[in-house]
Length: 177
Image (tube, rainbow, N blue to C red; front, side):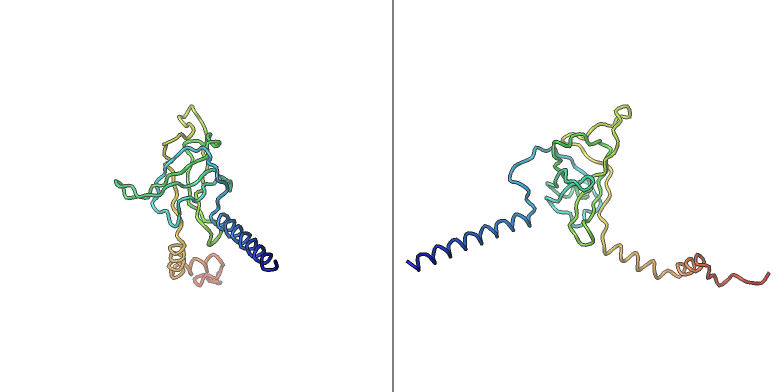
């Protein structure tokens, strides 16, 4: 009788452990729900997508409004083309909006920031529709390139002269009248 009770407890413990592992896997994968949201697809081309990945979020002001569904190389221009699935509830985004690749924190995941333009039907600006393309894009900032530019510019001899003239320590200034 005692062994039967311990077997049941071990089995229960294993089931709870498996449920916890499944929960953690879903949490890490950032799966919000198993349901499908109705979406419409929009494309955009970038010169560099950096570490952007499929299923990365598309955000407006920090609010997730869609996901990246495909990243591929355009066969004609050899530039990365990103396909976004925007949730249908956000169907009033002007077609002159822009996209920027940003990073969550210093070393966080990359995501697409959708910067909303303005709506003016008199100027021919309408809302984004399924299959349309966002023209105004800003590529990912590569941290290594940024550090390289900083190091390269810090070795510029004119930089120290500019800094000393701004601070008032210019060697060429004289105190004689």
